[in-house]
Image (cartoon, rainbow, N blue to C red; front, top):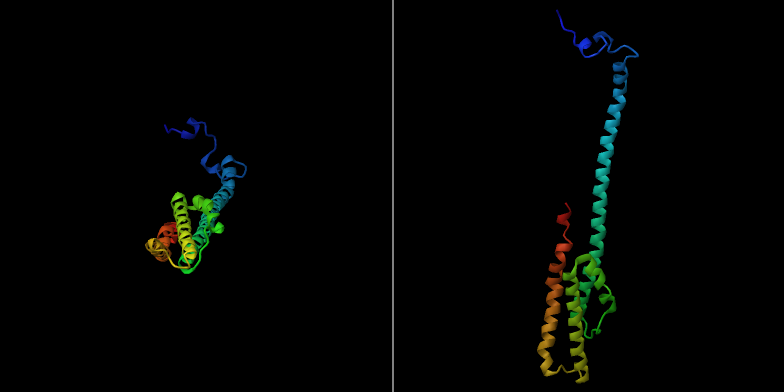
Length: 175
């Protein structure tokens, strides 16, 4: 005696009736193309979303780079001006107003560096004021201090400024 599994499990559709119009299996198979298309569209939508996220991240990095680069330029300009100008101002408000942005975009390391530059500008200004009061002759006790400050500003402008800002402006980390 042969065992019929269809009857044992309550299946009442004969094997020849699977593709007959109106059967459950026919209706399931009829919906298969729509399900495959929906699956394909879902995959395409996921890839588009991933690409949009990648573009948004790149735009954020570029915006951050631009804001950081403006602070780098302002800092480098301040250093260069301290070396090039004969008379510097006691404090450059345009520069000191950038301190909060520097702290936000870089952290305390760069903010403290910018503060150090500002303090050294003030020291150089004081030396220049004492020189003016001394008939434009640098007082003997300030010659070394003035020379050291000018060397410090020159070194910062030529090397150290780029080295300090470099890790924050590195494109290779974006890839």
